[in-house]
Length: 501
Image 1 (cartoon, rainbow, N blue to C red):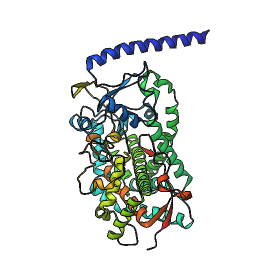
Image 2: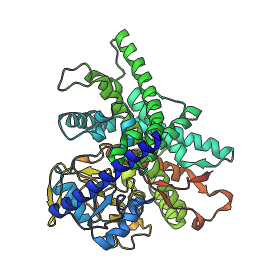
Image 3: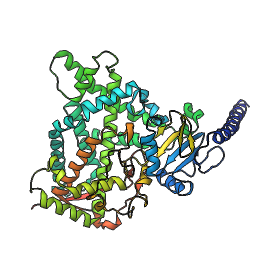
């Protein structure tokens, strides 16, 4: 009887909440003049329609409702931009007004999440962290000074592939690129490897990292029905906390070791951890806390490994899927690069076709298909519509990069479209925003561009590649797996064949 009474109270509460929300929402939309969009079902809105492959579902809806539309997801209204013109309105013209960032419920499982750089409002703390990124981590001069590290880790990667080739083993491209990125970032941050690249711990870390990216992007009822947040109805927060806690444990250990050494000696490694720890000795407003340092490092590892790994895997997949384009890429390398040794980073500027292949991959397989969501900081007028304060904003970069309005044969892999043209991926051309744009543009863009090109050019120059089990290129599975990053649904496995000439 008590259980029946409890269920009756809960049901009554939900019904009352729904009725109140529907009435308020109807009056709200009428008053605010939101962009058009599907009305959806009672209570849940378009949650059933927007399922797996969210970017693709939204692209189809945009053909009916236009390049600026409103999608109702539970109790939340989301405005979706699906054209370069609308992306420019949001990411450039009204950049400040849309600089907010809604925090997914899954992210709140991380200790100190509200202080993490991606979710901070663009106030004083965010500007301070951005300045540190730009001045000490991703500045061009700093990256130039660390070029030898990138050459070293790529050389080690090639040696590992050679070992696999000599044993006749197939290579999981995503796995070897992930460990290469981990090695690079750990050397940049700690002057040492966090983990042995071939260890079980490295494999575990890759799984944990992937879990975070997948679970953050997984449709979560708590994000669309705020009253469900305390209950974590799908267990997403509980599952993702394991990965966050493991990463924090690793970083805490590294920080403890470094602080112990700093107390024992005045010598400094000169790596990024020392730079960040120096900031902990500054007074406010310029100083950092230990938690700030840890969150920055965690973010660098999560974002830096996953996005670059996914991009390289897609580049290699497209080259194997398109043998003619692979032949052209190899031809360019044979004409310009001297045989033997590791291709140097400075050589890449002389490889326009390879650069075009990478750009075309980033167009076809947008790393973040919906970019990271924005949020209106105030009421904003766009194209005669009113976007109310706190409204969530999605920019469907995947849809824009495959729109026939801007691209000839948009679903075909054609690197030639990027030859002899000035199509900028640095946030100035809104047809092509693999790193987003505006003040929320990816701070690690300069490093990502360098390391992705360096890894790809050495994998292509040093080896020929065969698909396993006699698979033909046209039989490759090129489907996408939606997440914060757009992963390849079927991981790429290929057999290296050493080039001897």
